[in-house]
Amino acid sequence: MAELPSQRLPHPVGRVVEAIEDRKGERITVLDLRGLSDAADFFVIASGTSDAHVRGIADGVLKALDEAGYPANHVEGLPTGRWALLDFVDVVVHLFHPESRAFYQLERLWQDAPALLSGP
Image (cartoon, rainbow, N blue to C red):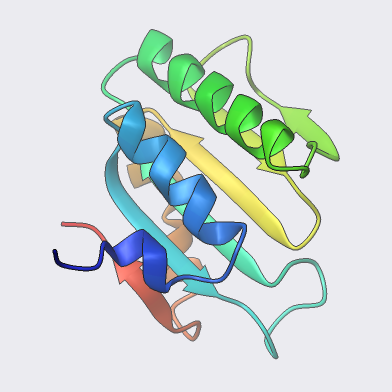
């Protein structure tokens, strides 16, 4: 059986990716910020197809990480669903509605960070 991409990622990053995949999140990207930022070690960026989908993905990630012993340190944007930020200290998860992701262009902003996983 082939190893899943999330199994090659540091824990809890791999668990975040699995939770996003479980909720059918799209265009999952993991950026390694170690050595580039003191704010976090990893950004996980993904898209949902609607505001409700973004909220559902966020709920799934929050639940999965809490069960794994990583409760969120801070959460923003969840009620609207256009963008949600889930801060787990070393790992920051950005979930976007497609138009918001195109507007903020985090992958471009952090283009110096190696991508450990890059969705289509």
